[in-house]
Image 1 (cartoon, one colour):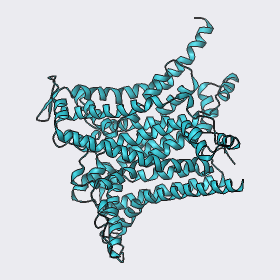
Image 2 (cartoon, rainbow over the protein chains, first blue to last red; image 1 turned 90 degrees about the vertical axis):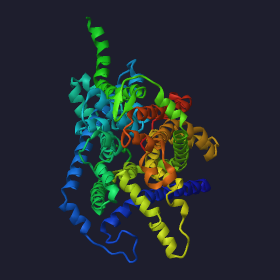
Image 3 (cartoon, helix red, strand yellow; image 1 turned 135 degrees about the vertical axis):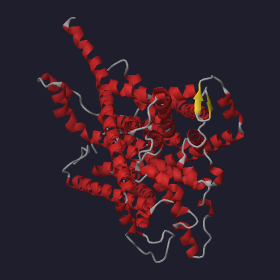
Image 4 (cartoon, each protein chain N blue to C red; image 1 turned 90 degrees about the horizontal axis):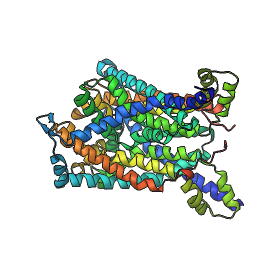
Length: 272
Length: 294
């Protein structure tokens, strides 16, 4: 018994180490980006010297602010579309025994099986040659929401599979309308999965290059500015901007950690 | 209409009302565009304009020229290797988060997604900065009088490492979402009945989480097959991928018809992979064994 317990401890520790190494691998380039944003000399120098010029240039230039605001708009719009469509699809499939469930399931996950690049160019070809529309923010939002909807759908489906719909039926029996029932019974339970779907769709759209690039025309976003400036070498301003974005994201994570630690908000976790 | 039939109609209408908008959206912004490139792939481009005279020349070019075969095989093999590495490394990590993550599970998964807030180009450039000839790894080696690792400088290996870097979070998340709905108490039952841990894994955990794993495999393989950015920055001169060549048709060269044919080919290749995985999927063994709140 003890030996088995220890073995589980060892394998758990090995897996924890794997997770740590993965975090290290994933964050090493990001730490490098942050370091470079402060470095006076991009070539790895000993000893390092620091400067804030990149940040001064960043705030002096209007291009980056515009790109950031476009990226935020794009990501926000795309995430809203994705979350609404995905939630509708997931709830419909889990709640109603329709004959069309298989078909709907297939359509909702189909975008996952099509590469970004292919979605980008096919929507470009369709808009430009069939509909005769130039690229704009709305078409880019919709194009990005295609995959966002699938990811959101999977996330919501995975979390909602255990949801007990009898609670909704009970509320309806007691006279609650569908909207009130959703707002007071369903939503309080499922919001973490909606939040997760929104977040993933937001992240995907915020930094998508291949879909956005082909559907946004000349409107700058962060990835397209990065792509465009590659010709002359990435400006340190971009590194500075990325560092600020990361700072913001991690501030949110720290808040989330605090909420989880105190148990104030459980984000769907049902233990103590 | 009797009250009874009205009641029976209702759920179907509600089903359509909820799922309908998403279905329409996906038909309009995925299926119709894909259909349009299928049509264009049989057309002809001349000086950046598409002309509707139907022919098979694009496919003849695509299948006839050795360069496209090389690009495709290169992309296919590297996508297969990258997917395998992500699978091997991703499983234990997803397992750890699902089983031992406790109340911090969501945060641990989001930490895998957060790097995406820094665009792929920036991260790949940074990776290049770390791995390249004047990067952290090789400069440190040189500092200690050691030779730099040539395999990491503008090679297929570096490009593969970049792909693992970009896509392993998808694999971990897909497996994690499956494991979250897996009842770990089944493993206790297996242990009580005398199964060794590896046998319990092979006969219970793995098959019951195969759907999530298969989704992870597809989510990594398909974007790797089409990847443009990574081979371009990390791969060096001999790494031109199918995706790079495809995106050139829609950019620099403006040969939309040939590009469409390449797109169709890419889609068929992805579809073939999904068809190969499909027979292994058994929805009844979906692994939704109902996680008890651990």
